[in-house]
Length: 172
Image (spheres, rainbow, N blue to C red):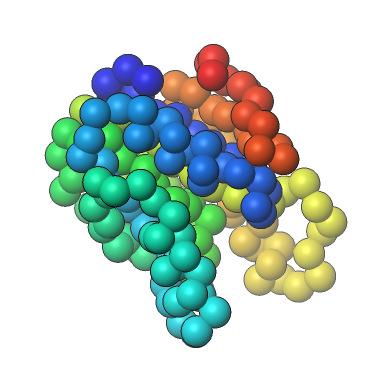
């Protein structure tokens, strides 16, 4: 990955996307920054976060950014960055009533302002059935719009299916 490149990694739940993305970042000279968007509202989520941290290689610095990812990206500097994940960030914004188009614009500007490799992970949620409630449909639609915007900006887009990376834009 060249300096300044943005790689967007999409996949379903437990598809191997985070592991693939971490491998892209750790192949670069460290230190590395992990921009985390998850919030631990219950014991199960606290356990998931702890497990995820425990599985990372040594050398990662974690920045918590449940809603202000653009500021987190601006504050990282020239380190390679892994953002995991956009759909949790979007959920946080949606549930807090944020202006999603404005947040997307700020995110894209932050990605454009990065002078170092950036890998962004997200869940592909638009391949299933139409959700049965308005909030879930709003989330699915917002995720689709966000993904299109980030994919258009990214230098590479990779879809991970069953642990296998598939180049959608650019090369592996």
